[in-house]
Amino acid sequence: MAQSNPTNVIRFLHVIENLKRTKRTGWLDNGIKQPESISDHMHRMGVMAMLVNDPSINRERCIKMAIVHDLAEAVVGDITPHAGVSKEEKFTLEKNAMDSFKESLGNTETANEIVDLWHEYEDASTPEALFVKDLDKFEMIVQALEYEKSDKKKLQGFFDSTMGKFQHPAVKAWAEALYKEREEVLKQLN
Image (cartoon, rainbow, N blue to C red; front, side):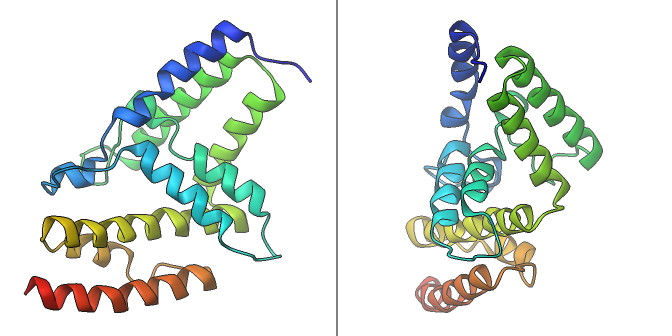
Protein backbone atom coordinates (compact mmCIF):
# COMPACT_ATOMS: atom_id res chain seq x y z
CA MET A 1 0.00 0.00 0.00
CA ALA A 2 1.37 3.41 -0.99
CA GLN A 3 2.26 5.78 1.83
CA SER A 4 1.87 9.54 1.84
CA ASN A 5 5.02 11.63 1.73
CA PRO A 6 6.08 12.19 5.39
CA THR A 7 6.52 15.95 4.86
CA ASN A 8 3.00 16.18 3.43
CA VAL A 9 1.60 14.16 6.34
CA ILE A 10 3.16 16.63 8.78
CA ARG A 11 1.75 19.55 6.75
CA PHE A 12 -1.72 17.91 6.85
CA LEU A 13 -1.46 17.38 10.62
CA HIS A 14 -0.55 21.04 11.08
CA VAL A 15 -3.63 22.08 9.09
CA ILE A 16 -6.03 19.84 10.99
CA GLU A 17 -4.57 21.16 14.26
CA ASN A 18 -6.99 24.03 13.61
CA LEU A 19 -9.76 21.64 14.68
CA LYS A 20 -8.29 21.62 18.19
CA ARG A 21 -8.13 25.42 18.36
CA THR A 22 -11.39 26.35 16.61
CA LYS A 23 -14.30 26.69 19.00
CA ARG A 24 -17.72 25.62 17.76
CA THR A 25 -19.62 28.60 16.43
CA GLY A 26 -23.00 27.72 17.92
CA TRP A 27 -21.58 27.85 21.43
CA LEU A 28 -19.70 31.10 20.79
CA ASP A 29 -22.90 32.65 19.39
CA ASN A 30 -24.70 31.66 22.59
CA GLY A 31 -22.10 33.16 24.92
CA ILE A 32 -20.77 29.88 26.32
CA LYS A 33 -17.76 30.66 28.52
CA GLN A 34 -15.50 27.73 27.61
CA PRO A 35 -16.88 26.25 24.39
CA GLU A 36 -15.72 22.95 23.00
CA SER A 37 -13.54 22.75 19.91
CA ILE A 38 -14.50 21.06 16.66
CA SER A 39 -12.02 18.34 17.59
CA ASP A 40 -13.70 17.80 20.98
CA HIS A 41 -17.02 17.28 19.19
CA MET A 42 -15.56 14.80 16.69
CA HIS A 43 -13.78 12.84 19.40
CA ARG A 44 -16.89 12.27 21.48
CA MET A 45 -18.79 11.25 18.34
CA GLY A 46 -16.12 8.60 17.72
CA VAL A 47 -16.55 7.29 21.25
CA MET A 48 -20.34 7.30 20.82
CA ALA A 49 -19.98 5.23 17.66
CA MET A 50 -18.06 2.66 19.71
CA LEU A 51 -20.95 2.38 22.18
CA VAL A 52 -23.48 0.97 19.73
CA ASN A 53 -23.61 -2.74 19.04
CA ASP A 54 -25.77 -2.95 15.95
CA PRO A 55 -24.99 -5.79 13.53
CA SER A 56 -26.76 -3.93 10.71
CA ILE A 57 -24.06 -1.23 10.56
CA ASN A 58 -20.28 -1.36 10.25
CA ARG A 59 -19.18 0.09 13.58
CA GLU A 60 -15.55 0.59 12.52
CA ARG A 61 -16.72 2.56 9.48
CA CYS A 62 -18.92 4.71 11.75
CA ILE A 63 -16.02 5.45 14.10
CA LYS A 64 -13.84 6.50 11.17
CA MET A 65 -16.63 8.58 9.66
CA ALA A 66 -17.22 10.35 12.98
CA ILE A 67 -13.57 11.38 13.22
CA VAL A 68 -13.37 12.70 9.65
CA HIS A 69 -16.85 14.18 9.11
CA ASP A 70 -15.77 17.72 10.09
CA LEU A 71 -12.14 17.62 8.86
CA ALA A 72 -12.84 20.27 6.21
CA GLU A 73 -13.66 22.71 9.01
CA ALA A 74 -9.92 22.91 9.68
CA VAL A 75 -9.79 25.01 6.50
CA VAL A 76 -13.27 26.58 6.16
CA GLY A 77 -14.19 26.96 9.84
CA ASP A 78 -17.41 25.93 11.58
CA ILE A 79 -20.13 27.22 9.25
CA THR A 80 -23.52 27.06 10.96
CA PRO A 81 -26.95 27.26 9.31
CA HIS A 82 -27.16 30.84 10.65
CA ALA A 83 -23.95 32.01 8.92
CA GLY A 84 -25.64 33.19 5.73
CA VAL A 85 -23.84 30.59 3.61
CA SER A 86 -26.00 28.39 1.39
CA LYS A 87 -25.84 24.62 1.78
CA GLU A 88 -24.46 24.40 -1.75
CA GLU A 89 -21.71 26.93 -1.06
CA LYS A 90 -20.82 25.24 2.25
CA PHE A 91 -20.60 21.88 0.48
CA THR A 92 -18.36 23.35 -2.23
CA LEU A 93 -16.04 25.00 0.29
CA GLU A 94 -15.77 21.80 2.31
CA LYS A 95 -15.36 19.60 -0.78
CA ASN A 96 -12.51 21.83 -1.96
CA ALA A 97 -10.84 21.48 1.44
CA MET A 98 -11.19 17.69 1.33
CA ASP A 99 -9.85 17.61 -2.23
CA SER A 100 -6.84 19.65 -1.10
CA PHE A 101 -6.19 17.14 1.70
CA LYS A 102 -6.32 14.30 -0.81
CA GLU A 103 -3.98 16.14 -3.15
CA SER A 104 -1.48 16.91 -0.41
CA LEU A 105 -1.55 13.35 0.98
CA GLY A 106 -1.28 11.86 -2.48
CA ASN A 107 -3.52 9.38 -4.19
CA THR A 108 -3.11 6.80 -1.43
CA GLU A 109 -5.64 4.30 -0.19
CA THR A 110 -5.82 6.12 3.13
CA ALA A 111 -6.31 9.57 1.60
CA ASN A 112 -9.02 8.17 -0.65
CA GLU A 113 -10.70 6.50 2.32
CA ILE A 114 -10.79 9.77 4.27
CA VAL A 115 -12.38 11.65 1.38
CA ASP A 116 -14.75 8.79 0.55
CA LEU A 117 -15.95 8.65 4.19
CA TRP A 118 -16.56 12.40 4.12
CA HIS A 119 -18.58 12.10 0.89
CA GLU A 120 -20.55 9.18 2.29
CA TYR A 121 -21.41 11.26 5.36
CA GLU A 122 -22.40 14.28 3.26
CA ASP A 123 -24.52 12.13 0.92
CA ALA A 124 -26.28 10.46 3.89
CA SER A 125 -26.85 7.50 1.61
CA THR A 126 -25.81 4.56 3.80
CA PRO A 127 -27.00 3.25 7.16
CA GLU A 128 -23.59 4.19 8.58
CA ALA A 129 -23.84 7.78 7.36
CA LEU A 130 -27.37 8.14 8.72
CA PHE A 131 -26.23 6.77 12.07
CA VAL A 132 -23.28 9.19 12.21
CA LYS A 133 -25.64 12.06 11.27
CA ASP A 134 -27.69 11.04 14.31
CA LEU A 135 -24.56 11.05 16.46
CA ASP A 136 -23.66 14.53 15.20
CA LYS A 137 -27.00 15.93 16.33
CA PHE A 138 -27.07 13.91 19.54
CA GLU A 139 -23.57 14.93 20.58
CA MET A 140 -24.64 18.54 20.12
CA ILE A 141 -27.57 18.22 22.53
CA VAL A 142 -25.49 16.31 25.08
CA GLN A 143 -23.10 19.24 24.98
CA ALA A 144 -25.99 21.72 25.15
CA LEU A 145 -27.24 20.08 28.34
CA GLU A 146 -23.75 20.18 29.81
CA TYR A 147 -23.56 23.90 29.05
CA GLU A 148 -27.02 24.47 30.50
CA LYS A 149 -25.66 22.98 33.72
CA SER A 150 -22.28 24.74 33.74
CA ASP A 151 -23.32 28.14 32.37
CA LYS A 152 -26.78 28.17 33.97
CA LYS A 153 -28.51 29.19 30.76
CA LYS A 154 -31.25 27.66 28.67
CA LEU A 155 -30.22 26.50 25.18
CA GLN A 156 -33.63 25.46 23.89
CA GLY A 157 -32.85 26.16 20.23
CA PHE A 158 -30.40 23.26 20.07
CA PHE A 159 -33.02 20.86 21.38
CA ASP A 160 -35.72 22.27 19.10
CA SER A 161 -33.49 21.83 16.03
CA THR A 162 -33.08 18.10 16.70
CA MET A 163 -36.51 17.20 18.08
CA GLY A 164 -37.97 14.21 16.24
CA LYS A 165 -34.99 13.90 13.91
CA PHE A 166 -33.20 10.89 15.39
CA GLN A 167 -33.56 7.70 13.37
CA HIS A 168 -31.37 5.03 14.94
CA PRO A 169 -33.07 3.16 17.82
CA ALA A 170 -30.06 3.43 20.14
CA VAL A 171 -29.71 7.17 19.57
CA LYS A 172 -33.47 7.63 20.05
CA ALA A 173 -33.19 5.82 23.40
CA TRP A 174 -30.21 7.95 24.41
CA ALA A 175 -32.12 11.10 23.46
CA GLU A 176 -35.10 10.07 25.58
CA ALA A 177 -32.81 9.49 28.57
CA LEU A 178 -31.17 12.87 27.95
CA TYR A 179 -34.56 14.65 27.75
CA LYS A 180 -35.49 13.13 31.14
CA GLU A 181 -32.23 14.33 32.65
CA ARG A 182 -32.81 17.76 31.15
CA GLU A 183 -36.25 18.06 32.76
CA GLU A 184 -34.54 17.95 36.15
CA VAL A 185 -31.87 20.45 35.08
CA LEU A 186 -34.51 22.89 33.80
CA LYS A 187 -36.34 22.77 37.15
CA GLN A 188 -33.15 24.08 38.73
CA LEU A 189 -32.67 26.76 36.07
CA ASN A 190 -36.18 28.21 36.49
